[in-house]
Image (cartoon, rainbow, N blue to C red):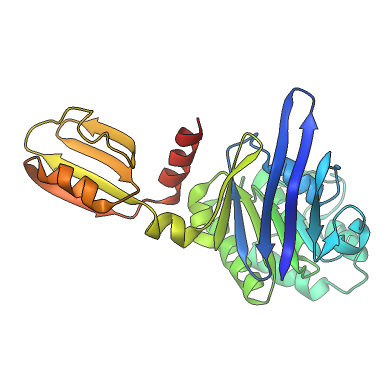
Amino acid sequence: MDVIEIKNLTKTYGKARGISNISFNVEEGEIFGFIGPNGAGKSTTIRILLSLIYPDSGSAAIFGKDCIQFAPEIKKNIGYLPSEVFYYDNMKVKELLNYSASFYKKDCNKRMKELADIMDLDLNKKIDDLSLGNKKKVGIVQGLLHEPKLIILDEPTSGLDPLMQQNFFELLKEENKKGATILFSSHILSEVQRLCNRVAIIKEGKIVTVEKISNLTENTYKKFKVETKAPLDATYFQISGVHNLEVKGNVTSFIFKGNINDVMKKIAGVEIMNLWIEEPDLEEIFMHYYEKEA
């Protein structure tokens, strides 16, 4: 079953960038990465899913129901963390979270304390006394308070120190084990690679690719670094399938996709001192897609 299903979704803002004809699905129980730089269209897509804005064309469904038509019903089972959080300053953290819990008509006190302990959040502090990172913790607890079936996260780790990021990732994994589906939108690719099963790459409002992380990093590309006895001309490895070519002194590095025998023939034609063949990380693949599309 698809928890999120997006088909040909388009939203324009006049001459300003929006999203154009994007399609992807998020399967039940997966952690799905949605990646691209700031301004690529991630937040616009999420705001349509949350019915905060309406699309110009196309459709988006959550739990098999149109996310605009059935918005109030759907939102009962969604936890959302925006990239920036803003609250009533004169409230205590506990008062704010109790207010949030009241919308779900369930007792969330036990859950609130558990989450606050995990995130090292003082429930008795006033909102206006909190740092940016602690306000982000409030947003995390608030988003997970009602044990949602779908968790939507937009740049969730901004403001969190490394220790809290680790706690947060472990918390997300536990929620996922309990059955929650997660849409994780970020421009920090190491986070996506660490958590997600599949990923959609978006550029300038258009989907570039939707792939399994394992396919992107293991089966499709190889990362080569060749150290030669003498420096090579920059054109030597400019063959089909070579991307991100870089020559520094006697070391030539690149990402390769294609018949590996083609690149091995080129390597055999020079006197080498050392050779490394590795799996590229998601960031290198991401840059390849962006350079290719440019």
